[in-house]
Image (cartoon, rainbow, N blue to C red; front, side, top):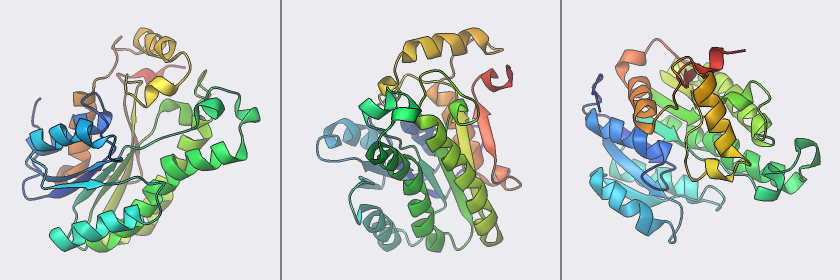
Length: 257
């Protein structure tokens, strides 16, 4: 992995690693290679054995639980970071979920419970994290979350996640406006389709990947290390002149009509 930026002395939180194919893990590797000290989360006791070896490989200073559906866990996570570090320089939020029955059906037919669950996990959890990160970023910082082209255009089989990710991207713009005076930058990273555990829940995802590889100008699927390189740049001082952006890393797929 090419190290193009420095994160020496910075402390960052990575939320959303499930395994070594996770986008969050690719980003964490890039952050660590650039010199950052990391806090890494795991979903629950079932997930811990899969994530803990990765946190150890990253030499993560903090390894903490975070299920955004559990009341108080997000607040507890940031309280622990405040106790241990006293500050936070950047946050990567790479969390998304929708019930399978709602995700695989038409948006028109989705249940209220399914829509609310998808919005809570995939969008509002980032807003909550920004709220708790704000007091830890007295010297400024960067907040990043993950979206997809289906937030901007109707993509076959993306269904419920389209409007949920659109809400996430709009939230980024509003939070960038609100937090900008404090030197806190907020970004949406929008990768092309990547074969992760979360993405495997999308119906006919293999077809979506094939189409993306065929239509992208570079005629390839983006990799987690390339996504990580972009995230490391956004976390660095080199990106200080940017905020509120949806930044695509999809080998150019988003420019095709």
